[in-house]
Amino acid sequence: MEFKSINTNYMKKSILTIVARISVKEEYTAFVKAELLKLLDVTRAEEGNISYDLHQDNENPNVFLFHEKWVNRELW
Image (cartoon, rainbow, N blue to C red; front, side):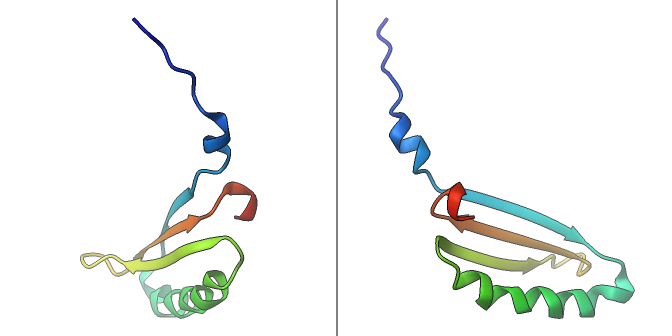
C-alpha cells in the first residue's frame, strides 16, 4: 500500500463556502427580507467574494438561506 502526502499549500488556498440559515417570526419576514437584500451588492463587492446568494424557502417564507463563496478564509 502506498500513501501520498497532502499538498498543504492547496489547502491554504481553498475556497471557503458558508451556508447560513435564518429563521424569523412571520411578522418580521418582510422587514428582515428587505434588510438581507441590502447586503447583497455590498458583500458581492468585497475583496475575495466569489458569490453571495440569498434564498427564501418556497414552503416556509420565514426561512432564508445565504450561500456564500470566498476565495479563502482570510478574505472572508
